[in-house]
Length: 70
Image (cartoon, rainbow, N blue to C red):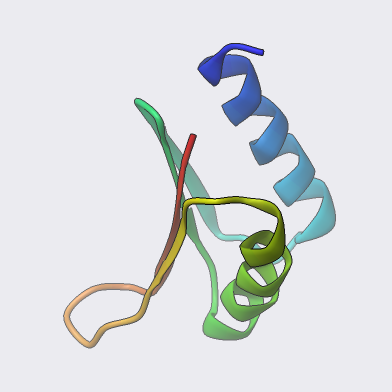
């Protein structure tokens, strides 16, 4: 599966499973997910076991988000 198709499938699955997602940005080899902290924790818990490269960023200077490298 190409990276673009993989990204599209991940985005489709996430939006179906987590309707509280506010925004998903797709960049070259990266998906950035923005949502409230509780939703991000739910997503992270699901993804952490299934994907190798998942990063959860929480900070005071930027919105919390999850980065998935594909």
